[in-house]
Image (cartoon, rainbow, N blue to C red; front, side, top):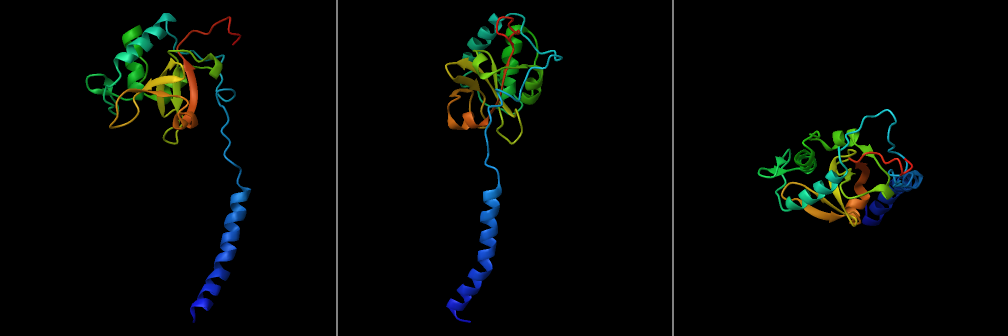
Length: 187
């Protein structure tokens, strides 16, 4: 069999497969990144959320977080001397400030803290990200001006990042607060 005949035979076999692939790709719905912060996470009227006793404690948590910049990341870490992971950072800050413990697990912290809308976001609130294909698999502490402090991943240190960074903007999947629900906010 000559080379042109081989190519023609290959083309006859490959064309239907390519056509199926193109048709299949066209029939798939495009990925739509909804702002779940507007619709899908709503406070439950029946839930008892973890709330700080004093709203000033959120500001104190933010100030203490700056002292932890540069601390090594360590998976499962819960104190600055041995290293911190994302939920360990937040749990440590809350305990040092309020004397109360949060679980050492980002998704569990999301379950017990009150979800808020984007326009309600204030320093000391919690940001949750889907970084592993699981909802709320990473978290950080909002410090204002579109920035947050977090313990990113192995080999890195606690640092400040911007919510507008493409990676974090695309992976953000929850905003929660430790603050008491304000009666004047219309919530």
